[in-house]
Image 1 (cartoon, helix red, strand yellow):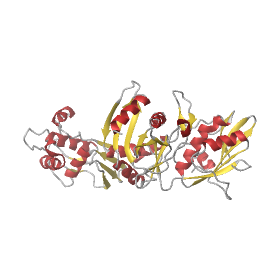
Image 2 (cartoon, each protein chain N blue to C red; image 1 turned 90 degrees about the vertical axis):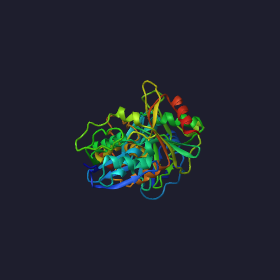
Image 3 (spheres, each protein chain N blue to C red; image 1 turned 45 degrees about the vertical axis):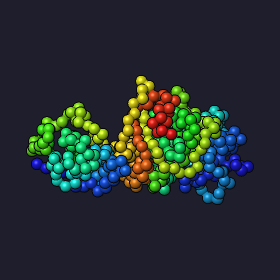
Image 4 (cartoon, rainbow over the protein chains, first blue to last red; image 1 turned 30 degrees about the vertical axis):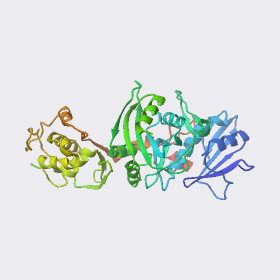
Length: 261
Length: 168
């Protein structure tokens, strides 16, 4: 970060500029904005997305392309929104990759996907897998290329821990290894949390798994018909399962038994 | 009586390594996932056929575990989504009976009793409209934008706020 509290980051073809007017806000941006990517001096020209934290009227304000999107008493209170703004900007600008809303880890050299809607517990499963030695790829998006390989998007995890509010956890806080190369999909587990804490999971065909991925992508088939080919390659190497899961620790134990790793 | 594919408008058919299929019907803007059993049935009626021939064709993929009841169940799964047109009744054991009447058809329970290593046929469909609805919610969580600040649209299509933020 330069003296004016500004740095640039390139992520998947998108150019971000992050700026803050005080040391605390600078530290927050540096710590949580795409933290695995190198920081660069601001380039000449307009970035794709300009993100600022301003201090005014006794509060900190998150401003994206000159529009106010959130305010908080302290900079850390803006982090969840900051991460979501970055996520959405990255996903909308993907050119050679397509996203699946899925928790993603690598285990024994292959990627394990947990596709699911918000509140499905993707982050809990990812964190539990990471605790058991998996390499962290993402708790939110699996980025798939045309060969079906998954690219890491290791943003800070947003975890709830039983609370309705999310809070950020950096991969290094979990002592996690972070993925840095693309890898093939080994397994897909589409799991919904069971209120009865019951484990009821069965194999599904790769065709059904492809359908599950299409239900969990932010892209539409009308606008991105090519993603069928991307996802078809992804499921072609995978064993696929769907069903109800128990608590994250118990579920991950069963998953590791099932994948035989 | 014959069994034949109902739609001539399926332009894309993808075969996956486990034998399952993914079909895209552009005319009806619908995608279908067929498991391996339904996929074998789909293949077996690539030309007009009957239950007897279809059963034999499926047996080439799965062996003698494929019974006429299972083939009939596969037809019904495909028929439900208008992928095939057919009229079948429960075949008598040891025969390849077909008839020009619609079911009585085998119950799922009856078919289950005939199964060996072959999975029950399953066909799942989704329209492009439904897929778009899923895409709307497959995003990075709900924005916790304080009031009275404008909320950011979660839709993948541009709303006024998205355009203002340059997010699309």
